[in-house]
Image 1 (cartoon, rainbow, N blue to C red):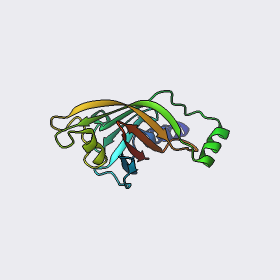
Image 2 (image 1 turned 120 degrees about the vertical axis):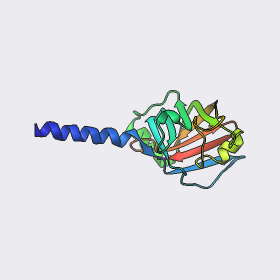
Image 3 (image 1 turned 180 degrees about the horizontal axis):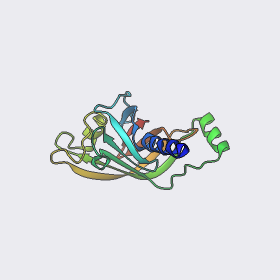
Length: 163
């Protein structure tokens, strides 16, 4: 019985640890330049899988996301030698995918949304919000265990975030 109790608590803790991952920093890419790294306010969380994840505001439900990122052909099972080579050469993994986010009265254009990414990023609860979707190129910095650094390029602009 004691083993079952311990197993139950370990399982509950493991599920909670991966259900919501805080976003540590965000940046925007406009006209060929990356902006400074900022702590997102209000705080953003990530939920989902590495190839299909949503970013949403702490306190909201993940279905009220501000960003939905889908990656085509993502591979998390990569040979250790290949991972070491990419880490040594600082060579990112590159994928195609889509990015969805909400525009609203406060961020009516894609440019204004990118500029304010991470600071009052609109979601479906904003007045007059409308969802837009764009094809994207997603670059993921090399990693040992799991992806932690995403760069998403679309419409000659981009966003980046870290876990």
